Image (cartoon, helix red, strand yellow):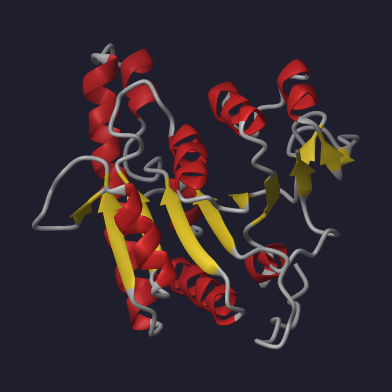
Amino acid sequence: MTPQAPLTSDAKTQFRRVLLKLSGEALMGREKFGIDPATLHRIAEEVKSVHSLGVEVALVIGGGNIFRGVAASTQHGMDRASADYMGMMATVMNALAMQDAIERSGLPTRVLSAIEMRELCEPYIRRRAIRHLEKGRVIIFAAGTGNPYFTTDTAAALRAMEIHADVLLKATKVDGIYDKDPMQHKDAVRFSRLTYIEVLQRNLKVMDSTAIALCRDNRLPVIVFDLHQPGNICRVASGDASIGTRVE
């Protein structure tokens, strides 16, 4: 990948408030599991760059780098609800790690959990979350929706709508949505724009169908982009239409 110069604080932004959805695997870097400190630091610095543009930032982070509830229930016969609650705990661990990294970059940060654990983070209250954003704090939503059978993609869509985000930024390991897996098919074609219905009808696996349906019903645009290209978070948050795939 070719490094790109970071945006400056003078850049104009299209969005006032964004929700950034990261997979747990995004925190692994080149490791096979867990959290890679260098990757954590890089993401924190990019979040700081977005914040410096005057954009209010909230995050939702998955837990797949630590524990996958669906995999545990299907492969090992674990009760799905129990497995999903364990996955929620994994998202809290990732949120606390990201909070530490962002605060070390100099930004005030709050973790709001859908499952109460007051010794570690604040309980999720919608109005409190919005107030934190208005005061310039970065918000990290943890523990998904607090309910089993719902993915962190769905949690991201739900929280984005609750805080009135302008867009949901879905960071992935590829540079947008393709008609088939680009890792396996060299002739895969990337879409620059799609409708929600096209994503559902084509069964494109970028987000689960519940999350896409929520975004469709509430007209929340989704931008899918490559997390691993340096500077991409800032460019997408500033409204650079040349990056990723936009769903609306």
